Amino acid sequence: MFNFDKTLELPLQLHWKHAEEQESMAWSIRARNYNTFVANCMLAFMLFFLLALSVFLYTAYHDISQPWRTLWCLLFYALMSLVILSMTHQRINFAYRITQFGVEYCKWKHFPRWMLPFLKWFTGITAVIFICMASIDPAFLIGALIGPGGMGLMYLSMANSKSYQEMQTEYHNNFYHWTQLTKSTVATNRDMVELEFIAPSKDGSYMASGSLYVFFNKHKKEQVVDVIKTHLPPGVPCVIGKVDVWQ
Image 1 (cartoon, helix red, strand yellow):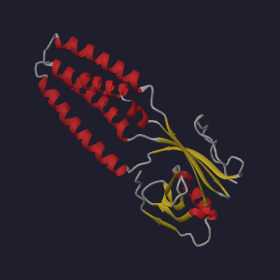
Image 2 (cartoon, rainbow, N blue to C red; image 1 turned 135 degrees about the horizontal axis):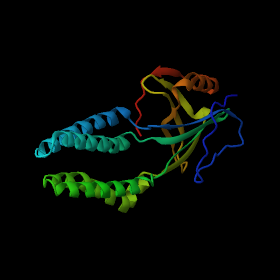
Image 3 (cartoon, one colour; image 1 turned 180 degrees about the vertical axis):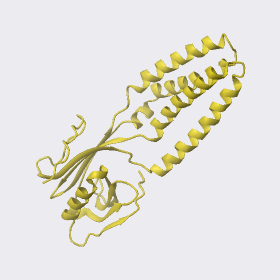
Image 4 (tube, rainbow, N blue to C red; image 1 turned 30 degrees about the vertical axis):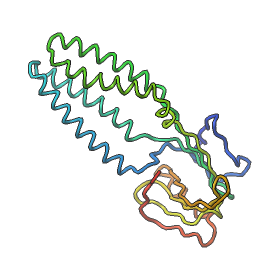
């Protein structure tokens, strides 16, 4: 019926459980599948802290000409802001298939292998720059400890922590029949629909309740909502309201 985007190619670890079913709609997206308000507050706090640190570094290098002090502190603030942004605004891959039988989705996140070489080279290059500038002014040794030193510790913790790398790697696949859905909420604060469900647990020993978050691009909102409404069983409410993502 609908096929607005080419379905995202799934990694080898995942496959569609019901690929034989004719799809009504399919799409893929990279979305922030967590409470973005908390993440945004954390980003604002860290940027404020980073600004205070940059001002401290600026005042510490009082023997250097102002243009060099300004340039270095702005560069330090920009690079560290990018690092913080990559931690507070992570996205995960989603692929959805809607059929007449239910909603199936895959989500996955690979450990970013590029991050370790980047941190390694960035730490080495900035350390050399600080050491060279410390020959002009010993005050740059403070910056070497705070900047490259902190990045070096981050690199070591990420490279040697198996639990951290596993935390940054996810592969999930789920399917829910329309009859298992109990409520649909079209979010007003995000581009998504929350589908509440009651389904058997993995071991089948009890019935578990939860929420399926269906993310989509803003321009697809009307189509996605229409398709979901079409397939919802009679009696299942579809409301509009604020949705808080707790994952």
